[in-house]
Image (cartoon, rainbow, N blue to C red; front, side, top):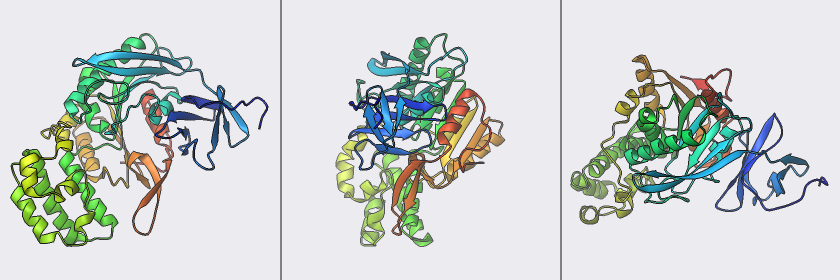
Amino acid sequence: MPEAFSPAPCETGIFRLDQTGFVALTKGAKGYGYTFSDGTVGNTQDAGALLACGKDAVLVNGKERWPKVALAEADTRFESHGVMLAGRLMEAPGAGKDTPLVVYAHGSESSGWIDRARDPYQMVGRGVSVFVYDKRGTGLSEGEYTQNFPRLADDLVAASREAKRLAQGRYGRFGLMGVSQGGWIAPLAQARAKAHFLGIGYGLVTDITEQDAAQVARELQGKGYGGDVIAKARTVTDITARIVKSGYKDGLDDLSAFQQQFGKEPWFALIKGGYTGVLLGMPADELRKNGIPRFDKLDIDWSLDPVQVARQVTVPQLWALAEDDRQAPPAVTVERLTALRGQGQAISVYLFPQADHGMRSYVQAPDGTRKPTVITPGFYDLMADWAKGGIHGAYGQAYRK
């Protein structure tokens, strides 16, 4: 072990040896997660971890001491609809009037992002300033966790105001980045946040019921089922869409009939989706009487039309999609984005092959299950270049649509 390296407790941050690459440390459910700039991921508590923590440095591969980068960080609290949210501005060394600044719209996770999310650090390590915040009801923020997209968009607008206030005089282009569920929220906030651009990772231009239906179909296809079973599954996702959109008033008798007709089929128990699997596992009378409290408290606005929302975006958009995404299948989204581009919108679409949700490459077992591996190469480079104002060259194996 090099003499200059002193083992010490882990700290979040960016560590780099030279300008060719870096590694970011973030807090995990256990230990600290690490993400190298090439997409390699792991945890400090893993057997065979590639990284050990030290004082103001990390030890990589047991031999190289990578010093900690001195980032400019400012913690803050700001208000949205009477709720106090916690945020942090992170700026790379030398940030100035030409440095891009982005605010992230989170995915659907119920955990905070400050100190925990890898994406902001990957942007800062590439010279993009980032404002990150904990969603309402998560991390250090107050309020109730929700999946009400208009309310979350209001929070994103408030975060944008705070980001610009803290970074005043030290940024140029300002944009919104959204991952997963954030792909619904960032477009809702764009105009009011006065964003110059949007960057979306593995998001959708479909509504929640369409996502659920596509997810169910992908699940069954992955288990080897063909068109006859997929058609039956489509029938039930049409039924469950009516149920959730009507507040459990329409479709319950049809659900009960479907359960009785197909409940003993081997594929029936494999259906999950976003919510259809839960509804299939419950008696219609119980749904009629009690609904599903854990879903209902999320206060989902089922009326939103994502195509209409996307049509109102007036700035350039980048959509980076995972081709093999089982949670957010991209086919319909690509069709709709292509149509919007044909109507004059400035939309760039990149598809990353062999990538699942979260832009994770994977190894697939014979039974269809997948083990995630690295963050697919090129994804973070693409998002950072977009924030800087120009995408050029190759980004891993991605191709443009």
